[in-house]
Length: 347
Picture 1 (cartoon, rainbow, N blue to C red):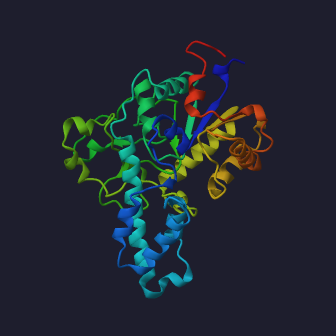
Picture 2: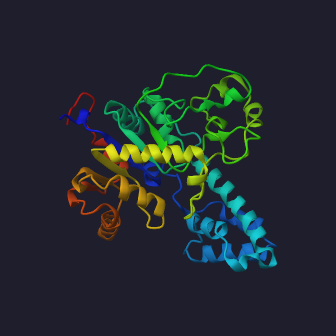
Picture 3: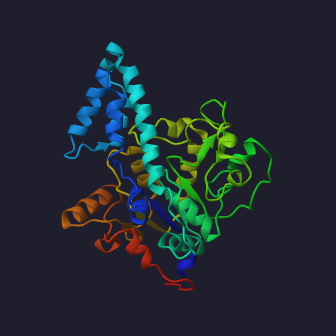
């Protein structure tokens, strides 16, 4: 069996984007933290929770998953003194700041044909690999599109129309392909048509971005935007992900992910920290990869010291079994991509 016959699957996390865009945020960082403090000044309950979170880090950084979880999953005593209303306000502000931070990091990033990210995208197309990601950003989407074997109309696992279809009517887009990018937590470029009720039907979701969008060429962005809801379709990084079940599009995407993982003969995790707090992901991989031998799993991360390498191995082995030491690559995603076999090679 040649490498082109192997059913390959790649799973990417925040470290994948960070490898190619150094200023891309991780889940712990500065998400306009001082502005958040100013926004909740005069709201004692929200200020207290925000201050407590910042005090846990020496630089005053926020663990956005931990804080969003605290604000989203209320405690019984949060309903006193209108604390719940204050937390809802802070959560909305934090979501907006998180999205702005992520989008600003990618603003101006050029997807060059000779870049490492496009080389990875071409590799995925060459071996017909499925990509699964927990990332909200659309860096890999743009690279796959630039590589020429993937499109946002069919490549997400469902027919996703362009946002220009909210103001005009266009064709169904390019033909479907087998190459899929399954975004398990939604995406910054998935938007619902304005007025549709949650949970959104599949045909309510459109793709809206600058790297392919027909809407940007034919219509002013504000004309299209006024036909879209105020925020993209995504699941915030909270520990209780009820939207995974509530949203039809995410039910579909997770089902496809399970099916592709179950059939995979080689799975590579790239820049994914495998957090112990993400129980949904741990269940998915435990059940879908139950029959995949550990030696067919590769883990790519960036760990500067032996303690980090040891911790990475422990997190993965705790879920996926005795993955051999040789299957861990800890010099980072970019270095790993640069070692991929060249086009035409069967290695």
